[in-house]
Length: 102
Image (cartoon, rainbow, N blue to C red):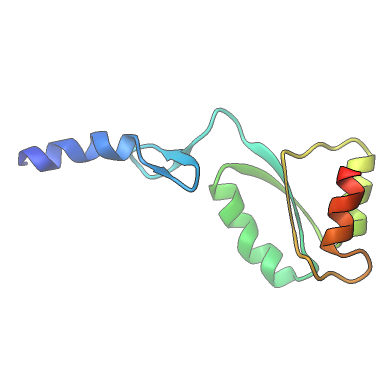
């Protein structure tokens, strides 16, 4: 092993990407999972992106529409982050943001 090989784990242990710190196995390091609400009417996008968001360290709750998101929030669930499609049937993403923020 040369000098460069010995330094690689040290460099990896402090890697930062997309606002995340990774350990030497390239797993994100978090004190705890942050609650995230992900809303999209498409099963395809919910199924594709949920594992990515979980791998990024979020505790993901998915909903198929904005009305479901509003219902969860009104029932007391709290989320650090809300990711939503803009073009959803019924209440769109802009209306959801206004309702949640408002």
